Amino acid sequence: MPPGVAVVAVLALNVVIQLGLIVDVYRSGAPRYWALVILLVPVAGCLAYYFRQLRPRSRQAGAARRTPDGIEPALDFASVLRARAEELALCGSIDSRVALAEQCRAAGIPDEAVKLYRRCLSGAYEYDPHLMFGLARALLEHGATDEAADTIARLRAAHPCHRANEARLLHARVLEATGETETALAEYRELAPAYVGLEARCRYGLLLERLGRPAEARAVFEGAATQARRAGVLIEAEARWAKLARQRLAGPRGA
Image (cartoon, rainbow, N blue to C red; front, side, top):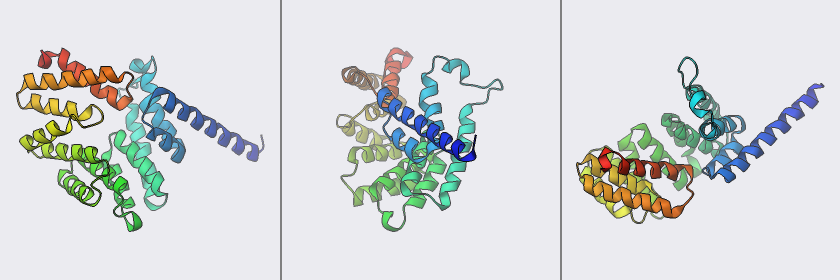
C-alpha cells in the first residue's frame, strides 16, 4: 500500500473511532466533557474514554481490570497522560490543555492538572472563571488546601455568579479538610437543598457520620436516595453518589 494511502486510512480510522466514542458519550449518559476530550486530544482522549468509561461497563471488567502481575492498567494510562501533559506544556491551545487537565484530574493525577491550569492562567486568561474554578478543584484534590482556599476566594470575589453553588461546595470541602468542621457543617447544611445533584448532600451526611451524629446522617442520606429515585437515570458522577447514599443506609452506619 502506498504511504499516502496508508496515512489517509489511519486518519480515517481515527475519525471513525472518535465519532463512535462521541456517540457513546451521548447514548450512555457519560459526562459531556468527554466529547471535548475525545475531539481535542484524539489518541489520549480515546484511550482515556476507553479505560474510564467503556471498559468498566464491559461484562468482563471484573476479570480484566488487573493484569496477571496485579498491576493496574490505569498506571500505564497515567504515564500516557503525564507524557501528553509535558508535550502541551510548551505548545497547544488553551482548550487542549483544559481538556487534558480535566482528564488528569479524573484519572487521579491532580498534580498534573494543577500544572496545566497554572500555565493557562496567564495573559488574557489570568482571571478566567472557568480556569480558576478548575485550578481550585485540582488544588483541593491535590491536597494543597491553602492554595485552593485562596483561589476559591479570588474566584468568588471576581466572579460571584460563576458556578456559585459549586464554588461554595469547594469552599466547604476546604473548610472540612482544614479541620473547621463546624463551619463546614453549616455550609453543607445550607448548600444541600439548593445544590443541583447529590454531592453536597452526601458530603454533608459523611461529615455528620464522622462527627458521631448517625441519626442526622441517616436522614440526609435518605433525602439523597429519594432525590436519586426521583431523578431516574443518572449520569456516572451522580450514580456514584446515589450508590454511596444507599450503601450508608444499608450498612452498619446506616442501621
